[in-house]
Amino acid sequence: CENEAVLLEAYEAIARTVADERAITPAAEWLLDNFHVIEEQAKAVAADLPESVCATLPRLDGGFLAGYPRAYEIAWALVAHTDSQFTPASLGLFLRAYQQVQPLAIGELWAMPAILRMLLLENLRRHAVRVMRAQQGRQLADDYVDQLERHAAQADTSAPLPAPPVLPPPPLRQAFAVQLAQRLHDPHPAAEMRLEFLDSWLSEEGLDLDEVVRREHAAQVSATWTVRNLITSMRAVSAFAWPPFIEGLGLVDETLRGHAGYADLDFLTRDRYRQAIAQIAQRSPHSELDIARQAMATARHAGPDPRRQEPGYYLIGAGRAGFEQDMGFRPGLRQRLLRAGVAHATAAYLGGIGALA
Image (cartoon, rainbow, N blue to C red; front, side, top):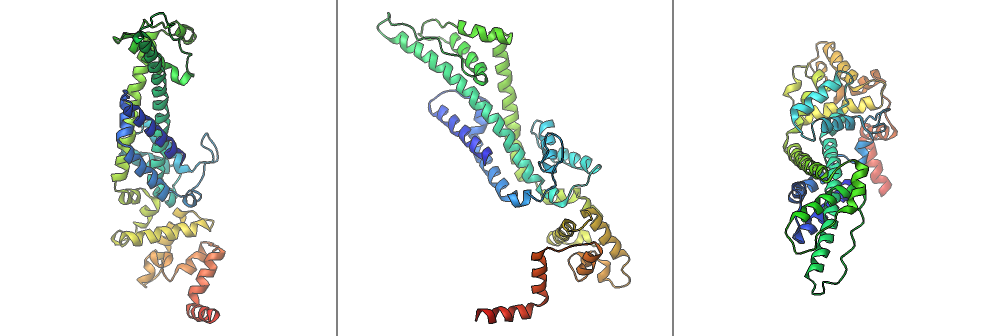
């Protein structure tokens, strides 16, 4: 919500600047022209990563991202090291390298697209704030020069010149100074501008005006490149076919593919297997990978009955109750009530009708 609010504020500020027929930077143009993409990403994050899902993801115990989901750290590292340029190959390398040390949970892998979208939005928000600050600095400079031009247009030439402006806050100063220097070189009917009030700030920074101009131009080029990468990556994340990619990276799926029939199952059935493994792991002392391996081992040693040679028999079939006991699964109250209702469906149905009558 905070990201969306700040980005909307930046969009409206840029739109007002364009409506006033003032120039904007290329980075601001990217934000203005692609705001519909930003809105789509924000809606996707809200739909795919609600608080209930976020609360189930494993958290980091230490480091500067302590308390954040572990998957957030992976996405953060990817965005930071690629200048926000998403490619499936780079994400695959990150996830495979991470899982060589620590396997990722099923929920972490499937939450990765939404987390990546959220990171892209957060990074874009930071750059949007910089774009707004630079725009504010240029606006202050333009306001001062416009005052000088209005003074020059007055018939009474004895009127005092407008006082030099007060330096704006530090985040606005560089763009402010560069815009003044730019307007100084533009032909206009105003009196000659005096920039001595910038001297103390330049002395403190150990810079001259030419260096400030160079830095501002470099910052604009960098901002344009990064904002372009962010918008392009958002489009790529939305267009990418995630299910086969995530299935190819999951260690649980890799284990289940050891059964000859697993690859022939449809996606919904494979997803039921994964959900069953995640549910058992959530309330047992074993990890998801251990449960998948145990289901495969149980199926391999099941005897001649072909039904029992299928890992799904122990995950979503009749063998689930016994498999849960072997895994030390402890169902919650809601699960116990639901299972009791299913086990005694006729009695529950008739009893419900009787109670209602």
